[in-house]
Image 1 (tube, one colour):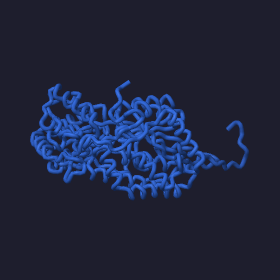
Image 2 (cartoon, rainbow, N blue to C red):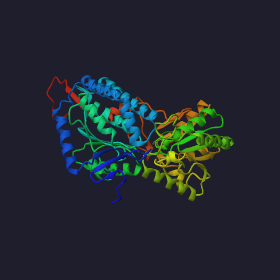
Image 3 (cartoon, rainbow, N blue to C red):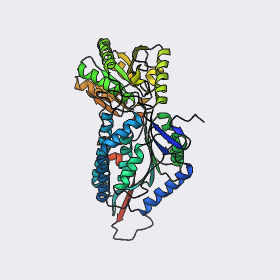
Image 4 (tube, one colour):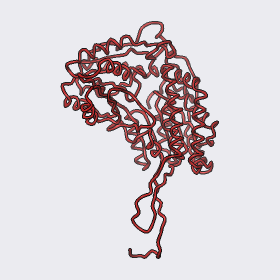
Length: 481
C-alpha cells in the first residue's frame, strides 16, 4: 500500500494551510461500515423523503434556498477554502459566487427542462420523461472545492437523486459546509451526505459499492480509468472530467498585449492547478522570441504571496506533497534537456519559508514528444514550442493523449475557425482564455474524459430517459401485426 499522505493521521483527515503549514481543521474518515450505512440512508431518503416526486418548481425552491444559504456565508466559505487549499482569497470569492450561480441555474433548469413528444407511428402517443438514478457518487478534486462540488451536486439533486459527495482528502472542509447549508435550506436529510477519506481506499469503495448507480468524477486520468473499469463491470454510467495538457496558440497577427496577458493568466492563475491550464505555449516562429521574452518578463513580476496578501497574483500550491510532485516534474524537464528560462525553484525568504510556494516557471528547448510536453504538471509550469504554419501547429497540438481545452490568438476569423475545429479539445477559446460558464457544456476529448457537465445536458447527465406510450387503439391488439 502507498504511504498515507500527510493529510491523513489515524482516523482523521487533517487540513493544513499550505501558506503557513498550520492545521485548519480535522474531519473523521469514513469507514466501510459508515459507507454501507450512508448508502442505505441515501436509498431511504430517495424512496421515502418525497424529493424525487416533488414537483420541479418545488424542488427548484430548495435549490434557490441553498444558493441563498451559500450567499449568506460567502466570506466565511471563501476564507475557509483559501485556508483549505491556498488559493488567493479573491479567487476563492469568485468560486463561491460560481457555486451560488450554479445552484440558481439548475433551479431554473429544474422547472423548465423539457422532454420529447416523439413522432407518432401507430395508434399510440409516445413521449419521454427523465428519471433519477437513485444514489449517485460525486467525487471532486482539491483544486476548486466549492465550485466543483456545486457543479456536480446541483444538477444531481435537480434530477432527483440522492448524492454521496466525496471531496479530496487534501481539501476536506468545504463539502461538509455545503451539506449543512443544504439541510438548513430544506433538502431532506440523507439526500446529500459527505464521504471523507483517501481516494484509493474509501473513494474506490464508494465507486464499487453495489448501491451506487452512477458516478461522476473530476480528477486525474489514471484514477479516471480505474473508475471507468469499475463502472463498466457494474454496468453503470460514469462521467469523467480528467486531465489536460492544453495548447495555447499565438499567431503572428495576434494582439500580443492581450495574448501575452492571457498566456500568463492561463498558466499561472490558480498556480497552474487547473485542468484547463494553458501549459503548452505554441508561438508562430517569426514572433517566438518576442512572445517568450514578454511572457518571461511578466512571469518574473508576478506577485507570489500569501493568499490574503494585498495584490497577490499567485499563492502557494495546494499542499506540500503536491509541491514535491511539481519539483520532480521540473527536475525531469532539466534531465530531458529543457532550458529553465525563469523560475524552476522554491522562492527564498522568510515570507515563503512556512508555505508550499513555487515560482512561476517557463521552459523551452524540448520537442513535442518529450515527457515534459506530454504529461500534466498541474502546477505553474509553462513549456514553449515554436511552429511553422497551421499544419505544423495542428500536428503538434494534437500530438498528446489529452484534449480538454485550447486557446487561439489571431485576428483572422477564418483561421480561428479552421484551427479551432482541427484541434482536438472540448473547449476552444479564440482571443480569450479560461472562460467557463454554467450554461455551456464542459468536458474533454481523448484521455481528458467522457461526458459533459454544465448546461442543460448537465442535468440530463444525472437522469435516465424513460419512454412512455399511451395506446389509442379502437380494436384489441392482435397476435400477428
